[in-house]
Every structure is written in C-alpha cells, then in structure tokens.
Image: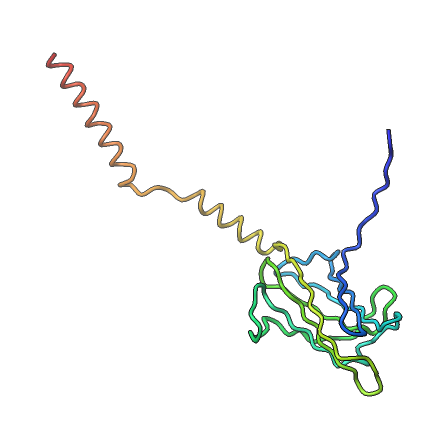
Length: 177
C-alpha cells in the first residue's frame, strides 16, 4: 500500500508583457465569491525578478464581465493601493466585490513613474467567481417560495368535477344495464 503526500497547488495566475511580469493573487485562496470583498494583489516584477512597487508604476486596474467587447466601459475600476503580501512590499492591490458569479477579466495597465525604466504593459487575467453566501441565501429563498406555492382553486376543482362526472356516467350506465 502506497502512502502519498498531498501538497496544495498554487493557483496564482502569471502574465508577462514586454519586460514586466505579474502574478495575480485573490483572497481567499484564489477563489473569489460574489457579493463578498476580495483582496486582490499583483506581484509586479521586471525581467530578472526585481519587484516593481506601486510607487514606481502608474497602474490602472479595470474589471470586465466576460464576454466583453473591446471599447466597452469597464464594470469596475477599483483604486489601487500599495500592499504587502508574502515577500512583496508596496505592490499594487485592491479590494474588489464581484457583483455575481461568473467569469471576469481583470486588466492591469501600467507605465513607469518618474525614475523608473520598464516598458509600458497591459496584462489581462481571467478570473472565475463562485456564488457567495448572499447569492446562496437568495437561491434558497426562491426555492422555498416555489415549493410553498399552492394551486389556484379552479385548477383543483376542474379535475375533481371531471372525476365526479365520469363516476356518475359509469354509475348511470351500469344501472341501465
């Protein structure tokens, strides 16, 4: 019998554009839920691994519901704040509340701030958002409402009257025979 050790798989998403790469992380555990605040951060690095803090980047984050067409206005434009996460300090981060479950695209655009020397970049990350506890409660209440609905009186009376008419007709026919 073999014993195996299971190690958690890192689900961070990585994108590269020109000489800049970024790793996206979403809390909790890269599994955002709709209606709940999601801490999001981007570990920006130059070729060679040098970290690019938000202070060195004029960055903008936009969020689109998928599918979307180019030129369409963003669903959300969260403001970026410097955050410290894992071994990264001052990297771009934001709190995002996704409105409903589904697939979203996070676009991070950036160009160097004064004194920085990396190429402008545009990175796109696809994110799948699960139903949050708020949506689960709504779904459960809809199911409960649906189960407690009663039929209108006429919908019960018509089949009942038809059954009585059939029984009466059969009774009359057997009485004549």
